[in-house]
Image 1 (cartoon, one colour):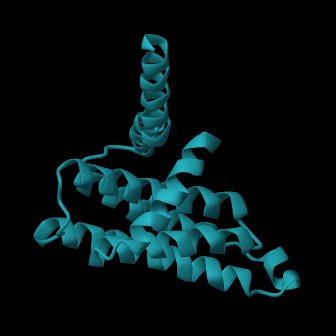
Image 2 (image 1 turned 180 degrees about the vertical axis):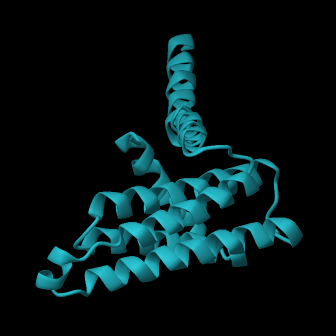
Length: 175
């Protein structure tokens, strides 16, 4: 299971990515956010949908963070194709989740998307290897590491306030 603090950082980061205007990456992040919201409304296989959607979002988060570390703002060639392929899987998850959410309650009670979810999980698993991740467990570990790194960075405003208050107290001490 993915720790809740990980989700608290990943979802806002996806919102940022959706707005930055990097063509493939922004589209992927926007689709991941739509999936995140759509799985909240599904009527059957809810846990499986949530896990699949979050794994896809984590893969995008890890991939985008690696691109950021490399300083890649323009995504071209293989990286663009890989992100676009992941967006395709995200879109399939979104389509299935939306179809499930619109079923009447009576039909949803008897219906299961387990086979389609399994198929999409396998498709997502193939995308893992594209981004140098060997398993979903490794994906969770990488995402947690990146989230921990991000959450342990000093907040610039707090850091600057700390410097200002220290320099102010030094100045008043010397007077």
